[in-house]
Length: 132
Image (tube, rainbow, N blue to C red; front, side):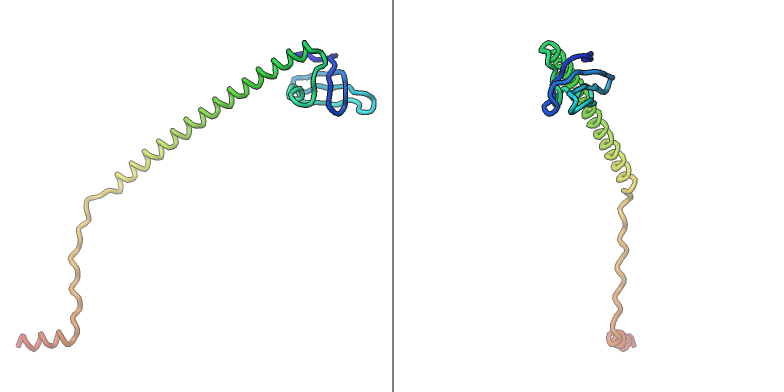
């Protein structure tokens, strides 16, 4: 929306006139005390500046509403894409984990028989004596 030469009101600087506008900024000429100030366009009209002309103000409000709706839609799409990406990553990790578990599973290990405990020397001598 073209706001050049429109009057705006600022809560601190008072009434001023828009003297320049780009895609991202508006330049406003206030009284001599405050001079020229630059504001971000269109976000300045959400909080700092208000158009004095009611018809222009209504158009600006509509434009701001549309911008807000687009931003919310983009934010919602990004959130959905992020959720899909996270879900795909979870699935991939789960598949990887399942594949790893299958590889690790091997035939049951056979237990080796326990080694006989060493007999004390007395018991060994006693056995030798009984063998004779």
